[in-house]
Each structure stands twice: as C-alpha cells, then as structure tokens.
Image (tube, rainbow, N blue to C red; front, side):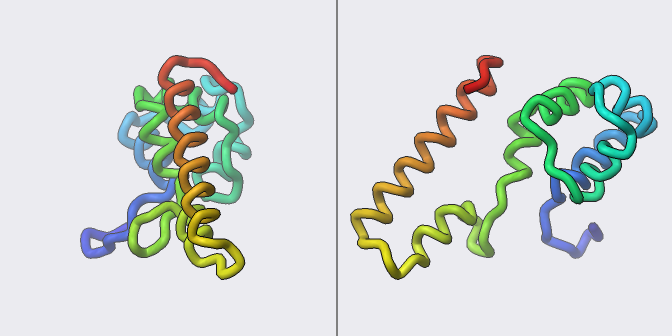
Length: 123
C-alpha cells in the first residue's frame, strides 16, 4: 500500500504489518498462536481466513484488539457499507419491508457477536 493508495489494509496485510512492527518472526508468532507457519503465511497473504479463535490469539499476541482485526475482515462496497447490506439492498426479489427486516437481523447478529467477543464468550 502506498501513501497515495486509499485502499484499507486487508486482514492479512494488517497482521503482517503489525507482526513486522513488533519485529516478530512469522515462525515465532505462529508458534505463540498455536498454528503452523504455512497457515500463518496463508493468512498474511489473504489466501485463508482465520477462525475466530485464531484471530483472537493473533490479536492477543500482537497486543491488538480482536475487534480491530475483526473489523478489518468485513468487506464493504465502495460506499463503505458492509457487502451483506449492499447485497440485500440490491436484491430485486425482496420487498422494502423484507430488506429492512434482513438488515435489522444482520445488525443484531453482528452486535451480539461483537458484544460476546468483548466479554470473551463465544456463541
């Protein structure tokens, strides 16, 4: 990513950048997280998406908030809204009321997950 590139870092880029800033070899972080070095490499290259447990362990070992890392995994459309919401809004087979209900359910599920993550519970 260059200074002129407005594109946000991907999850893998963010993990790699934070690991490098901590001067931590990939092999060491993988060992601390309890995953293989090749798996961490795939995560950093955005070839694999880590499980919630792995993401939390990476965040903990890099002294980051799991919420910060998790937020970076959410895909957005060009207007900045989550891709899920954008897809719901584009679907021609849904009524306005159905779209509103789906958006509300999505936001509720997301809020519960974030809240559980902050409390350290999983659901």
